[in-house]
Length: 458
Image 1 (cartoon, rainbow, N blue to C red):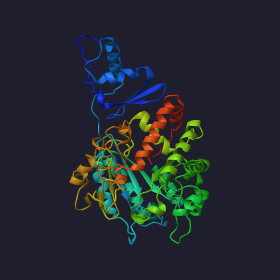
Image 2 (cartoon, rainbow, N blue to C red):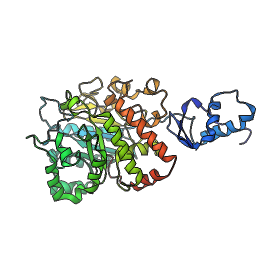
Image 3 (cartoon, rainbow, N blue to C red):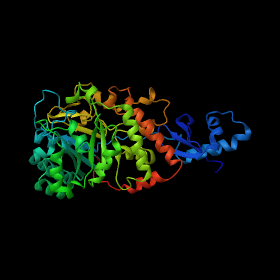
Image 4 (cartoon, rainbow, N blue to C red):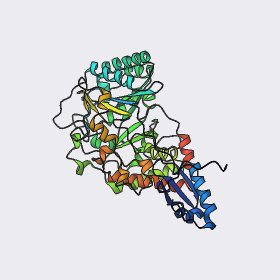
């Protein structure tokens, strides 16, 4: 180094260490940058935080500090996303399935559809807010969006025309149970490149425990009929399962089932005790010990190569965050996407920071279409509080995983400075397992490279 050059200001307090046996993991709690070193560096770590380094160790400590700085640890600030890039549009509250755990349908609610002009306005506003050159991702949700297909088509055509007029890019995704699929919907989806996520909880026995039709019968048979008629189309998309007591101990079985069907991948969403399940947590909720044991079993299968080429998101999300750093995943970073790069518009025009936030809680809504613009909604007091949430100040201050975990999901934690115990335990398990695996082999890197599926973000 030139004698006139100086190293960047280094903050050793941001760098946390984890003993992995032959290796040491060093991770920056703020920006999630990390390196893995041989364990002979361990005696030097405590010397990074002192100015009184013995002369005999000075060169080694300077070398370690330089190594960390070169890899981005202990320096710089965290870049928090600011630009809106995702808009969830809840087309309807109507659904042809009455899931026992539905987080979006309160007991006593009536099915209603969104106002198409209001939803068009939301899309137009979002396109103007989104920076030029970026893509605005529209996610159609419900209820069941395929029950209001005329509205969906109208919104897609409007969004494409508005994007072309404003010089923006737009993409379309949606969440569906696929039971109302038809040739017309297949054709339009393919023509306009709509990426669907499919709601299904596992095998027929698992799925039908809580995903029931309005007459009380299980819904898997309806999916099976759609799969028989339009299998080639359906197999091009991933499945999203709600994790409850029915499947929390059967993650490997569930992943194998969907891989066997030829689906494009499998993802999960953990049960929330809100909506129709507000008072049913004891009956539906997740068994923590069973979930953690089941996740470990699933991880070991991924590690062995069982799922090479098949994206198992309950593992892959943690792996991608660890290897590539947080950012793309709105729910696993120190600054979540709610009211920042994400907004959600409900069927009644409510503007929400995230559709998973409890409408009966303190963080929703931010305003209503026709009364509040999307930009104003992003600047409300509630939105600002959500965007300023930082659990590292309290619960997560001594956790090296904070940079890749983010302090657990606000919607599940319930409070700005609270953390969700289940999500916390999952992060501890997942990131610890990934670190130990990467300290011994490149097998997980091989799995990550094998999962090239990127149609949609569900």
